[in-house]
Length: 578
Image 1 (tube, rainbow, N blue to C red):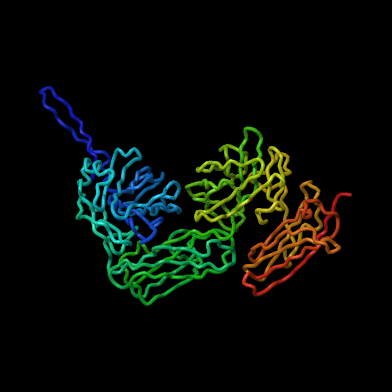
Image 2: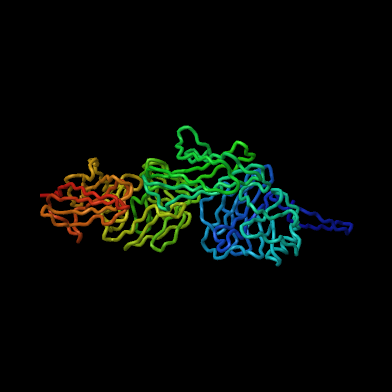
């Protein structure tokens, strides 16, 4: 066991000194470094290095705030809420971004410019960021490392002792999980690393080692390819493994009744590593917990048979209202809206302005239910809203009064929504920019306008300039029809809805007057899914209000692979006050 000794000496009347030795945090000795990989790739280790901790105790250990030093700066402080269960592992990925779970922690990439060294190095673990209580220490190579003397003084390592370096791709691990008597003989090189799992291989043990999805940007209705790396971690060949891909909506690792199964893949055998490919079709806009599970009848260990990935398809959560020019002493804020039919967890999402600094919204689960609102604000008690408010824990990205950008990114760092607003879109102190309809294209002025609400904003409720097209049944349709763009907040825009015969197309939409003259290009070369929605504010290319009359809306679309093209048109009446 590992201890930090605190010596207290007292002199009694006889002149004899008695030394009392107290032990600091005995329970912490149960948590130790169990395995680590410092040279995973022959040319670039960035994002691939990892350190595994193991809790050999029968009770859960809270390791929040612990300090991990992988022989390079900076130190990594384990985040608040990090706990490791009894006889359980936790895997820490170095210099890599990701969503923290109960078993996997991602250090991130900000401020880190180097990796662990490949010829010599160490791993040191402290129970706090003051580093006054060292828990574990290991060094490899042939040179004394930082904290070697500290570890030796604490009795957890011997000075001048080094583990032999491992070959590229291999790891160094304890021979028996958690059994460490602080000597070199406790460790061995693993030619088949076991990150997150036991170091003692079973006869048959297959594991889901990783999941990825392509393409990076996932659009509704388009094909998604899921790649699952399946490893044989055992000593023997595994026969007749079966891999299932499904939507694990209740996060219980089991494909229950009612959960959609996308693929079932069978192999004759698995001797080493193999990648399973699954094609997933027709996902609507929303967030999905896609899971991969593997099973084999002769398997001895099943704790590593499941892994999942959270994918965001389309843009289910959008920026719906922007307070960028508030009254003095009041908050800047953004209103988010979940326009999809399912819940969306924004844990790990970020918000940024035109400076490009990603600011994390929250490190904890924050689920937005369908058709619900959430306010991101610079001041925690503002604005008065009919929905939850949240100050991003990464800080507020100050919004410029004379134009700026707001961007949401999901936990995979992919853009979810982006609005680059300009004062020409509408500016008045204490009034917000409102989205006319959450389904409209985000980054265009025709989708936005100044709030008409008497209070200047509508946080947590339907926007005051909201409009919708109730006749969206043809290939292209417009509504309201007629409409009257006179800035009274009533029917100031007409909403164009279109439906295409393809899942992936390039769309152009133009407006013509009754004499056939083109007055506005609404969309040019826009990459669209099967259906879309756009707004026209009744203005021409030079932002001048068009005269009253009948206008033709022409839709031109081409399938992206060049296999087809269509045209469709409809008419809309632009009315006005007499």
